[in-house]
Length: 175
Image (tube, rainbow, N blue to C red; front, side, top):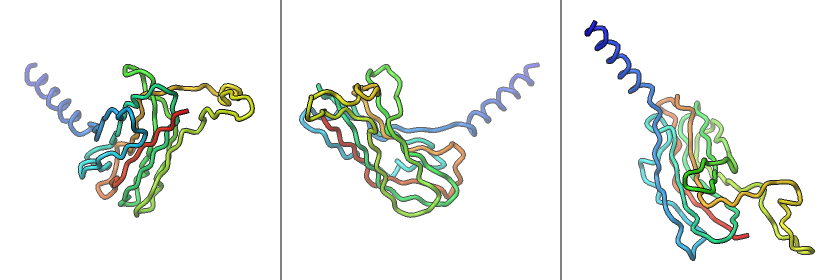
C-alpha cells in the first residue's frame, strides 16, 4: 500500500511539473505623482512563449482624478503557429479583480509589430453643457487606479513561437 501511495504521489508531482502554467510580473510600479507617462523596463526574460505563458506590466496610477488610459507595445513575433494576446486591464482597489479594457491578438505572421491598446469608452467633457458623456450614453464609468498590460499565449505554445517586447508604454490622461 505504501508503494502504491508513493507511486501515485510521484505521478501527481510529475503531472504538476509538466502541466504548470507560468506567469511573471515583469514590472510593477507606482507612477510618480507628477507624471502621466511611463515606459517600462523590458528585460530579456520578459519573452512570452514556452517558458512563460503570461507577462504582466502593472502600474498604480497614484492620481486624484479620473483617468483614461492608452498602452503601446512594440515587439518581435517569431514563429507562425501561436496567436499571442495583448490586453489592457484596470481595477479600482488593490484587492479587486482586473477588468478588461481593451485587447488585441497578434495573428500568426512573424516580424516586428506595434500594438496600441486604448480605453474605448472614456468620459469626455461636452463643450456645451460640461456633462460626462459616458453617463449620458449609459456606459458605466470606471475610475480605475490600477492598470495592467498583459501579454499572453494559450499555455500550449510551440518551442519556436515567441513574442519578445522591446517597448511597453502606458499613458494616463486626467479627465
